[in-house]
Image 1: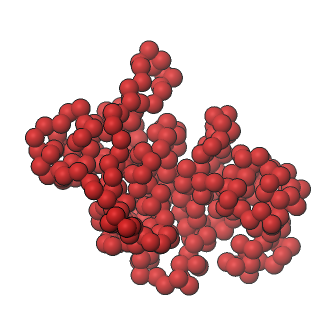
Image 2: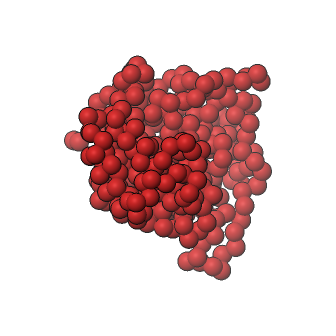
Image 3: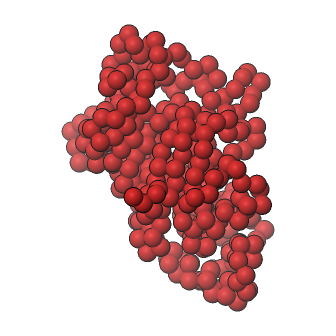
Length: 318
């Protein structure tokens, strides 16, 4: 049996605040095979981005991992010191951040971003670095002459392409894309998604796609993990989840998104708002908003059980 490239076991992450501990991620477990794509979806504040940062051992202060284990290609991520993690980040695991304008240094030309990356992580000389950067821009559909431009001279979509190029520059084994199409219009979003699919096949990438847009993962992901209030409440093959969502929250996410294949269906928003992660409700964290609530939902947190080729945390299937 081939071991997964990434295994996360019972991971919990908390942020300290004046009001108390913010339980951003709670008892999350998942695995990811080499060459596959996992889509992590949920509303804002569900813990998606924190999970991505934790995999890189990059949870920002005052956050900290309070429990769990992260194994990446036989490496125990949470036991690595900062020097080891600097060697892993970028070279083994890379991340495409939400806002490319704030992620790129406005004082550096695009070529300087690439040459700095190669200088820190490899022995590539300056000429080879420029050549490799130019090839990446060609793959991204950007003229290599634009290596001499500054970030502000690019459109939002082109800056995002540059961020994708930086993420792929060292041929990492795993790429985490954190809301890669945020603030892009639908036409540019479609271009970026098509580009990512093409590059995934060309470079043999393993991809984690973090997004609140469940329509994006329908196109990109082999498997979906649905997060709510810091916990994975349903996870399984993409086609199975879209064809027959088990958890009421998953069903609500699908019904609240437009579906061009069934334009006759009206969108139905999920009532209420996500819970306060400091003062979480008792029992199932979704029960104040759930249309199928019954007595056990208020009393205890549901266990995660296997049902119809997937995992689901809901009292309806206990």
